[in-house]
Length: 110
Image (tube, rainbow, N blue to C red):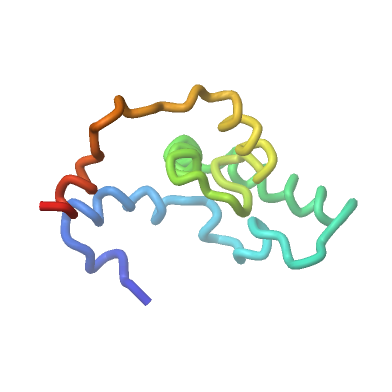
């Protein structure tokens, strides 16, 4: 397992917000549903997770990350999977002009 504290400075600073998350006091099962979970149990677990997020000092950073990477699972930044999907669906798609490449792709080709 990668130890985030041992990452190079620029990368560690990028992820430092995770050390401050209120979710660190809880197990992952609160934020990620078990297979087959449905109905009231699912809703109650999600609402409990959202309540933790509401008091979190890094809620904005967490949600920003989840939206940027299109995190498909769990409660992140106070939003459920479905809420994030709906929010992302309303965002206009950013498209690159034809013939341009991302920086990562340009470096890969070079």
